[in-house]
Each structure stands twice: as C-alpha cells, then as structure tokens.
Image (tube, rainbow, N blue to C red; front, side, top):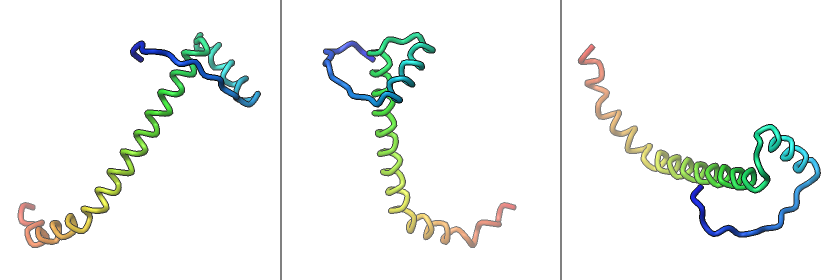
Length: 82
C-alpha cells in the first residue's frame, strides 16, 4: 500500500476476534496496524470483486437471448466440418 496520510481510528472487537487476531499476528510477525490495514485492503478487494461479478452476471443475462438466437442461426452448419 502506498504511504498516504494515515487516519487514527478506534476499533471495538469481541474478545474472540481479538484473541484470534493476536494469535495470527504473532504467527506472521505482524504489527497490529499492518495486520488491520491488510485485512481492510483484502475486504475492500473482496467487495469490489463481488460487485464486478454481479455486473458481469447481469451483462451475461442481458445478452443471453441474443446469444441463444446467434447459436440457433448456426445450427444448420454446426456439423459441416466434422
């Protein structure tokens, strides 16, 4: 992540979340701030990916009728090159 202006936040976690996070940070040798920044970046990327997948799905559905019609146009010649 490029260095930009940092903002300080307060964060409330359940004790289970905190303990798991602390264990993982120790395993990876990460500091708290780095761990949280990485987790936030990963979550942002996940949401963006889900939005893109939904847009693609809607696009495919919108074009499905045209795609079926195009396939039907080529049915008579499908087996010519076999």
